[in-house]
Image (cartoon, rainbow, N blue to C red; front, side):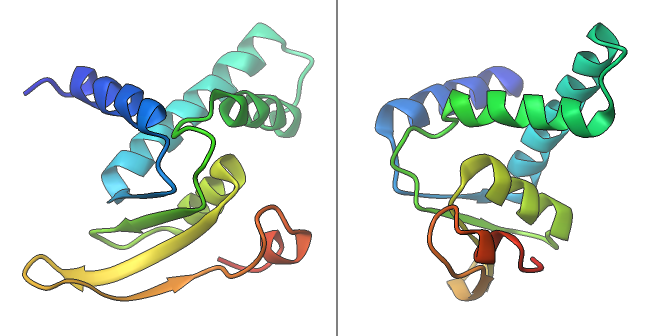
Length: 130
């Protein structure tokens, strides 16, 4: 019942824990993405001469600097429902780690996954369709 407060506490705990692998549902990652988009709009409103591409780049750098999940993350797992391609790409861009799109069921856990393979931050991997 705490909603955003509980999510904020979870993120504070995750930063302290500094996981190497983090898994969550589309809903959590999408809430981050919506917050990111709001910050892009706010940045453009504060600096009207800045176009959307520049505002996105500036906010992206801010999000990377926040180290949402600490500084050891190497793998993010996302699942629970259909994952939009733009959300997987955004996670890759912000967290700079491999993103696994997991498939499975509640009863059995993960059964399979599709993911982007490559070294962290490699241009070849970043440019592949996700």
